Image 1 (tube, one colour):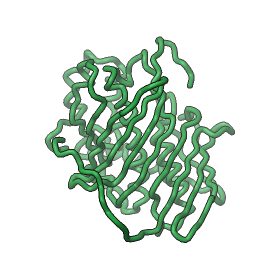
Image 2 (cartoon, rainbow, N blue to C red):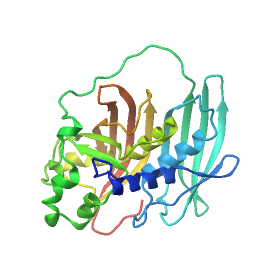
Image 3 (cartoon, one colour):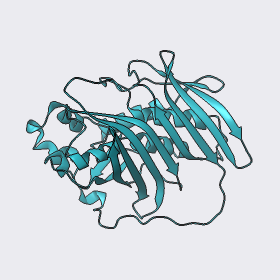
Image 4 (cartoon, rainbow, N blue to C red):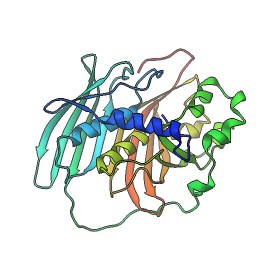
Length: 305
């Protein structure tokens, strides 16, 4: 799960964003077949948000641009190998009068590591309503850069957490409450995080949707650990995404601040369930996200999924 630490979109953060955009620009191999760049070097497995974003781009490449994606649902089947590219095989399920449906299979080493169904819908007029954005969340400009806020504590933090907060990333982030990273308390599993791309994005709507899909996997499952005073860095916790769903409600720009409101209503049977609502800074609900993930308490030894 990743974040960005450069509020001004400086050269390092911009380089990270450029690398993300290059990763999302898939290579066409044949009709309905695409190749995605390999994962981030140094990671043990491919970040789930990368696979989500690449799979969405692959599906969109086979759909009329006049039909934007309105929903997707993906299942993470196997951990991705970051040293190898990923092949995306798109199946054209249906091209209807108003809706288009695609199924995508991500393949590595001859095996599917991820599968996704997505639906695209031509623009139509209709009834409108939405949930209200929380009003008690500070604006992003009033919140500190996480790297700077935690810098004074870095020497006392575990190595995994120091590395996490020190690296430059393609997505900028402002966390409304950073205290959970410093004080281990069991709290209500809710968090509010402002997110945006660390630089200017092209005007292509699918790029903004793919970047948001990428960013939506950052902290969502981690929300479930708040109820237990745990962090994803803890050696006695195994955390992994199992499935991930996104509904895109309205147009948006991923290079402008978006508020990611997250909660976890359930944890049971070594699984945590989390929800997210994503708003523009003026309160427009642009997307909803759900995710269930493995949330296993373990000894120090790794237990394979």
